[in-house]
Amino acid sequence: MDVRLLKKPDILLIIFLAVCAVCGWALPLAFGNEQGEYAAVFVKGKLLCKESLYTEKTIEIIDENGHNINTVKISGGKVFMEYADCPDKVCMNSGVVCHSGETIVCLPNKVVIEITGGTLDGVAK
Amino acid sequence: MSRTKKIALAGVLAAVAVTFGWIERLLPAAPIPGIKLGLANTAVLITLYILGGTYAVSVSLIRVFVNSLLGAGLFGGFYALCGAGISVCAMILAKKTRTFGVLGVSVVGGVSHNLGQIFAAVLFTENTKLFFYFPILILSGIVAGVMVGLCSWTVISIHTRTEMKR
Image (cartoon, rainbow over all chains, first blue to last red; front, side, top):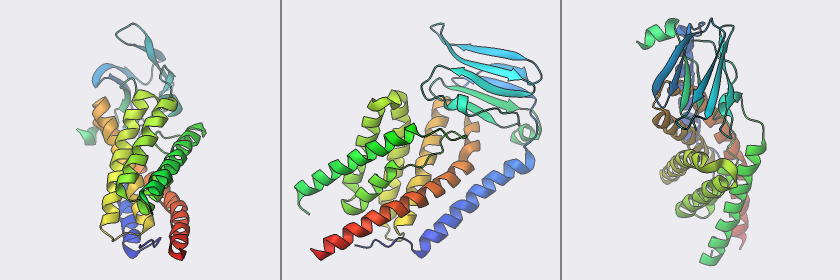
């Protein structure tokens, strides 16, 4: 059985993937990385509300049964997920976002917060 | 190797995969969602090399199933299944080509696992902006793949050496 650790194609594969990743990373950074203007909150793919980042606001997302599933907080031009009822809390651990194109996602509740405004939005359109 | 021995070994490896998956959830979460080491993949990769593709698929499925019972939940289970399923299929194909070494197969597994999960997330939230995470998930897949590849290769090479002595 052939159990060599490293062959030539392995190195080529890793370099190829790394180049793909770096390109994909650098392109949005070159255009974006700018302070966003709005926070758009999507629930199940539908836009729930769009708020300016320069307001102090707490948005409570309520499901069909009247439970508060997520709480989004906008403060000082930044957005973070203050509360989530899901067990993994990935969205709460995603921290604070403020650049256009950045997102906070709560997968179990199908909630996506997206920062819009700034150049990245213009490129996307 | 007899069939009985193979099944017993697959059971041991499945137990290792489950334990690794569980340990990994005890570690603090990475700042960016979706980034993790994928320790459980070492068991799957070792199975793939020692016992073959069919056993690797079973070990992977058992791991996802038991881990979702252990607390990842039904949703986490579905999500893990997308990543693990694509990952194990991609690794089997990568090994079949006989082009790649253990490290290459492992990197293919790591990257395809992350891509599978992001596809699942995009389908689930119906938000294509999630592809924003693509590059960073490819990078984390490469790093995790290299680590997992090194660990697995150590075990696989020891196993082949002892098998040859018999």
